[in-house]
Amino acid sequence: MDRSKFGLDLSFTDLTSRVPMTDEEVEERYEKIRERSGLLTILGVEYKADLSDINELMELGRGAFGVVRKAQFKKTKTLMAVKIIPITGNAESNKRTVMDMDVIMRSHNCPHIVRCYGCFVSDSEVRICMELMSMCLDKLLKIALRFPEAIVGKITTCVLLALNYLKETEQIMHRDVKPSNILIDNSGSIKLCDFGIAGQLIDSRRALTNTKGCVAYLAPERVGSSESEYGIRADVWSLGITLVELSTGRHPYEGCSTDFELLAKINNDPAPRLEPSELYSKNFCAFIAKCLMKRSLDRPNYDELLEDPFVKTSLSQNVDVAAWFAEVRQQ
Image 1 (cartoon, rainbow, N blue to C red):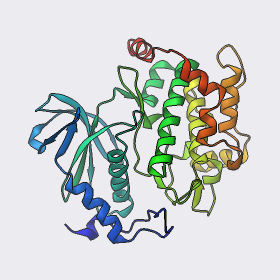
Image 2 (spheres, rainbow, N blue to C red; image 1 turned 90 degrees about the vertical axis):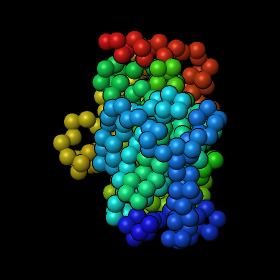
Image 3 (cartoon, rainbow, N blue to C red; image 1 turned 45 degrees about the vertical axis):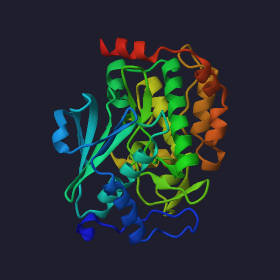
């Protein structure tokens, strides 16, 4: 394979040495994934497959980095989502591909991260076979208009548990938390996806990176700074913005006509807040305030957030997310 085509000028960071990984180390990571090409694990059984075993049914979505199609594995009749990503000469694009595959294939033990069945790798493209979820939350929000606090609570706990798993088990931060990267299925399961710009942590606080996520969800420390290091509390901010949007039906910085105006608001305006009302409990409003502290060190870490009264209440509540989702989809 032409390694220069794959663009191996990547900048992952090794946890022990804190020295950027060499081309050889990145190539080794890619080769381990490539060796698994065509091996699909479904319900604990491993199958050797090729593309002729996959029946593509319809397109589910399309973005800058590829297309996602609904498909079926013929041998088991398993429905899945197949993410098709071209391998190009763009190093940053290919970096996303390697990171997305690497994280999702290593995170199979976390029930709050979308499951990967396996992948197909060729010189021209990568196909990642993932469990089929029903909808991403940004599309669901357009139907529901706003989410009830009880549902937002379940979303909060699932995303927090996924982010904490990534930090504690994989030593990475997501860096692109937003409604479109949170998925729901008919059973009410809520899962985090899309790890293409996830950052390797160099200690318990910081990630070495210069890749931005979606501007509207960036934390203040990621806006207009020449610093390449920031930590998991940037994802805490993104989670806070996401929860405000889901619970109100409006992004707190909507109305900005340019990215410059948006970045200026994030950097200079007071952080968004919710006031207690019939719609929002005091605990929920307090949780949002904790997530959206302008100074990153004032924000709690995941362990602290998981002990927050709002989260503990959400964990203990019996909420029928599946029934709510079914009702919304009928609207």
